[in-house]
Amino acid sequence: MNFPPRKTIIQHLIAVAIIWAVYTLIFATAGYLQAIRVEREAAFLSMALSNFVFVGSSALIGPIVFTIGRRNASLKDQRVKQIRIIAIVFFAVMLTSLLYAYVAIKPYRDWTMEQLIARITLGGMLWDTILQAAFMTSGYAYGFAEKTRKARLEAAELTGRIAIIEAELSNEQTKHLRQRLGSHFVLNALSNIIALIRRERTKEAVDGLFILSDILRAIAHDKEDTLCSLNDELIFLEKYLKFQAIRYPALDVAWKIDNDTRSTMLPCHILQPVVENAFKHGMTSAGNLGLTVSAFTKGDETVISVCNTVRPGTARGDAGEGQRLTDLRLQKFYGDKASFRWRIEEDRYIADIVLPAPAQRSPTASGSIPGESLPGGNIDSEDIDNNSLKEETP
Image (cartoon, rainbow, N blue to C red; front, top):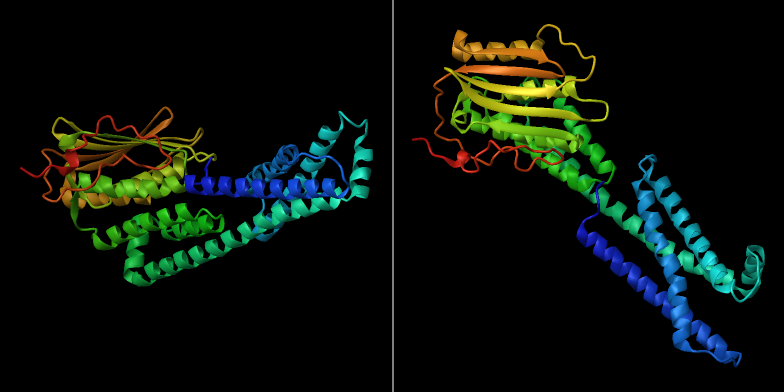
């Protein structure tokens, strides 16, 4: 469950406290003046305490109903959703006020609920209750309007950024991106960001947009016929997985990287299609996926392995286009000394990229450690050295 930021919670608590105090003072003062007018003995503090409990019973129910209502994602029309929540808050406040009045009066008057409602209606208290509920719900209506205004501004800003990114990519770059990231990744990624905006999850949308920008820039900058270090490849792969984790919070990623493999040279972004294949065939309907990325030395070979869980009943046939492309790219740089192979072991699909050792070393390996901050995923980084990415080439 996504909780509001601490600042928002504090602001809501302050607003409820102010409403609580103001209404308590208004009702206590009105009751005290009414008692003086009819020359009836009255204690202001006693009235204040009674009204404090009375107002609190409705002041607290509003935020609870409001929060529960906003969690309901079944209504796509935000305007209808807002009106419905405001109406529910209004009637919840009224009902709570009437129930409190019934509980408070019951020990002194042997009234039924119908008699209480009749007395309240004749005595004018019903109008006070309606007025109180109207004041409280008007505050929520204003909050809705203000939040909608801010969401539209943020949506316009994000949409503008997306347009700029799309405009910066030439037709050749767009073709290059689709070849490297899959035919639908870019469009789906932008659609996911827009969906987050419409659901008012603007923080996640902003985070996703920045990550996507980094991914697109990295791919547009690097060429297919170049090599990069495994260290840099893992940093790029982590960005890709961070973006996917926004869409799939249940993504479970483990990194098991031997430090002496980080300088291994391999074709740029060759791991991304392999990992994307894991999402295609391993993701369950509930959005669960277990993924392990490992790299180790075995004899005179360096093995980079991507292992993922497989949906029950999923069968893998011959290698697909992405797998054949991966094999061809390896042969282009290493010939028969490198290979791409895959296998199924029980409920796991394992794809191995095998490179010759000793590995070449990259003079520019730098960056943060993959696996430290993947949102939504459970990270196993016990085999990752915190200083390994910053080592200079000897």
